[in-house]
Every structure is written in C-alpha cells, then in structure tokens.
Image (tube, rainbow, N blue to C red; front, side):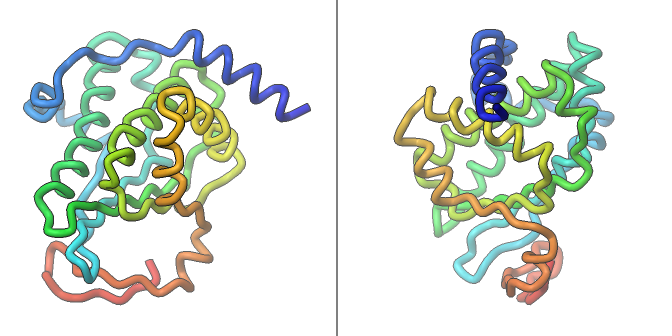
Length: 207
C-alpha cells in the first residue's frame, strides 16, 4: 500500500514539478544572494581528505525551505539560485582540485513533516536530486554522506530516485554508488580523516 502511495505521489510530482530558474551556470555563480538567504541556507568547506578531495557540509535538515516556497516570487527564486550555486560551487571545487572530485555531507537532522507535508517544498527538494545527478554523471562526486536520515527524508528519497532514473537512467548508478545513508551513531564510530580547511591540519574525528 505504501509503495502504491509513493508511486502515485511521484507521478503527481513529476507532472507538476515547479519551474526552476533559467539562468546559465555563469549567471548563477555571479549571483549574490540576500544575506537572509545565506544565513537560512548555509554550507561550508570543512576541509580535505588524504587525497586532497574537498569536503563540503550542508545542514539541509535545518533549512526552512517551506518558508520561501510559501513566500514565492523573488524570495523563492533567491533560495533556488542560492542552492543551485551551492552545487556548482561543489563542482567547481572538484574541478580545481588535483583529484577532480568532491565529497558532500548532508545532515538531515531536523527535517520534519512541516517541510515534507508541503507540495512545493517537496518539489523543490526533488529538483535538487536532478542537480546532483548532473554533477554525479561526470564522476565528480567521490562520496556523499546523508547523516541523521529519518522516515521523513527516506520518503522523499523514494520519490527522488525514480526521478533521477527518468532524467538519465545510467546517472542514477553514479549517484547511488557514491551515496551512503547513515545515522549519527554509525558516523560517530566510523573513523574519518580529513584536513580541516581553517587550520590545514589533519583531523581524525568521529564527526
């Protein structure tokens, strides 16, 4: 029954997917979002792994996407372009590194039914799967970690994966091969090594 509901919702979302902006990548990278958007949707370079692959972190579970989806207009557009710029920044950092790859860590802690229960917000989230796929198809994603995944996010993930298949069937294999969905507990006890961006020192940490 749940699978049937997911399939029905997926078909509806696919048919009514909200339009994204029509800016070029260069125009997106040149966009300077309002300070409010930068604060509401932060992302940052955490450091580098032993192969000098840049590691990016974004706490997507804390993003109040619904607020801007409901506001619409220029504020929604600013959120849309800002998040697109985030993905392009990840891509650019990979192209500028010797490894030609990047690592992304998405912390979904805090994602709740308020976000997942709003159609336009879910549409926006699913659009980000398409953007991820366009980067992953070129092999630029070394690893992707989704921390603190919960039932709310897993429901959205089930909607997003078929959409990736619709856009380019072979691309989904790149995404899934790079993606590890984990919990905070597993992350805590899995050794991770990287060089922190702010100190340049090798960091061995559980988180």
